[in-house]
Image 1 (cartoon, helix red, strand yellow):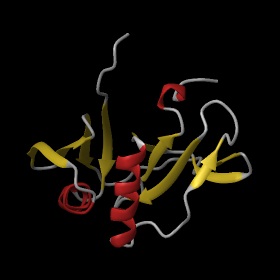
Image 2 (image 1 turned 180 degrees about the vertical axis):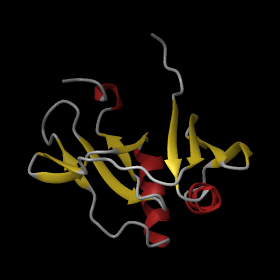
Image 3 (image 1 turned 180 degrees about the horizontal axis):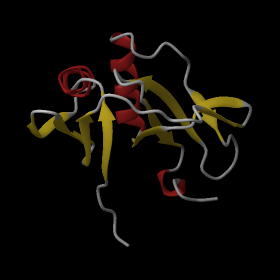
Length: 138
């Protein structure tokens, strides 16, 4: 199957704060919106945030390579130049103070990641593969 942008719909606490975070802070663009929902163009993929009162994810964390990670997260795969640019941008805004993590070191699929939390407590992972062709290699 050819590459295609994905669509992900998520509940959010406040559409205005969510839009400000993704557009004004991270630099993505917004699309359609109405009272109670907003679309965000995240690197060509459509995130729809819908105002909701309550939601709960029962398993918040998991362990991978001795690192505890958020079980529910999403993100984008960026080339090295765009990853560095986003990392610097997030550091300037004080959104990410942790050092990037290297996963699968010395193995196919080796990549660096950093994580940012949005106003809805969602965690966004920004990944950069050493070899972009290995994004789906096991």
